[in-house]
Image (cartoon, rainbow, N blue to C red):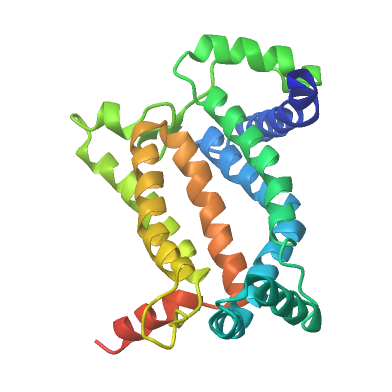
Length: 266
């Protein structure tokens, strides 16, 4: 299974990234590795565009039905069977498959994991071993490199982590901060502008869980960004930026709308 995963996903993604680096470096583009990571991330994002669009549209449809679902749960709170029947009836009336949003996520996870594994290899501190491994993986002779990858990117070293370099370069704290903030914006945009509230004024379990995850997940991603090489943060931030643009196209500002209004009214 591991070999199939390697052949079908990891090797093709590695070769695309390697080809981008060789081409950019060959025409004299500065910081070729950083820009090849960005371009590789964009390519993967475009490849996943159809399934991610389906996932976002499904999530938006579910948000629109949230008030009706809350009403059904409240009305049939003592009859779980009737509650499920009414919920499925509501889904059918609006042409929504509640499981449809999960399939695109399952499809994209192996691709994202492969991309992560490729980038973690590329930005490894053992540059000689990386060069050897990449040359062994290269599909064509012209893609082989004759010297270690240049890991510099606008004053940052893509192979170093902010945690290890923080004592000599405190400004690197901006990398995990930017990563966490951008992830918060995307997570907030995926929520409805107005959180559903039950008639008794209390939030339901789902709303409470979403509110907690809104802060926990960005903090967790920010911590990973602080601990892992900057090259991986570059990939994640590029992916998140395109996610923000994609989410805006599908559902607008979503839960960020109240925050934007507050900023404008100051």
